[in-house]
Figure 1: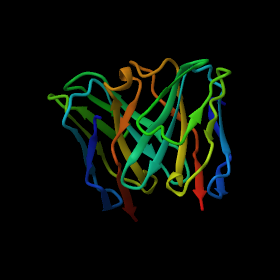
Figure 2: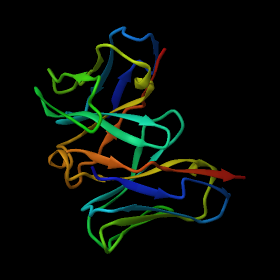
Figure 3: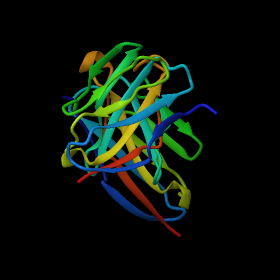
Figure 4: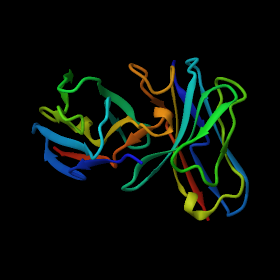
Length: 115
Length: 113
């Protein structure tokens, strides 16, 4: 089944403790992206990747890192999490970036709480 | 950066009623997308619009790409309980070399039996 898989689904951590949220897609998509969702703000892009070893900042990249060593994986790294990073995170992928008939496919989300 | 506004923020309707929601922007978009998010899941694409004035249907859903390119509308006919969720409009931003989707804040739909 074609899908975007995120792990974990739920994560509670403390301020300053490094964490990684994994994202994997099995559709051979070139484009992958991370979003955070906060009440009343919709989805805001954190980072995106056009292809292997190519990453770029989105609208809210501060406090986050990403890597794209393989086409299928796009982990989100929080080196020193803070409470304002408590949010619902979504990984998404598309065949060839933002273009005609290349819609985003989303994972089921990771709910992160930083205390 | 570009922003999208959606109205209403939330709506409660009776099963069987028709629903209408809209999405507006102060800047032009060349593509409009409508996504639905159900509780505990990621957004799922419902309809994609690529031309100004375009009217596209997907079952009971109909969406229109506004002539000004600054708005879009989504209508749901004869609502049913499984229509419950948050509906987002989205479009490719002209920032970040056009590689960012901008999402609206969503319209939360509740359907009362």
